[in-house]
Length: 109
Image (cartoon, rainbow, N blue to C red; front, side, top):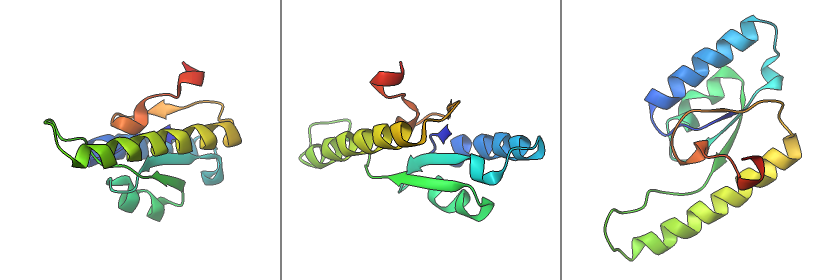
C-alpha cells in the first residue's frame, strides 16, 4: 500500500517505487494507492493500472475561518475511510509519502 500524495513531489517518488516493485515481480494488482481526491494522485496514478482509493478532504485555513468546520469534518471522514480500507485489505507493508494521507491510523502506530 502506498499512502500519500497531494503534490507531484510526493506522488512521483511513489510511482517510481511502485514501478520498481513491479519490475521485481510484484503484480500491479498487489499494489493499492491511498490518496486525496483533489491531489495529483487522482490524475497521475490511474494510468499506471494501480488501484486507487481517493479520500475526501481539503486543507485547513491557517486562520479562524468558517470553512475549517467543513475541512475538519472531511479530514475525520477521510481518516475513518482510510482505517476501513487498511483493515479490509490488511497490507503487508505501507509506504507513506507525505501529506495528510501519510499519517498511519492510530491502530497501526
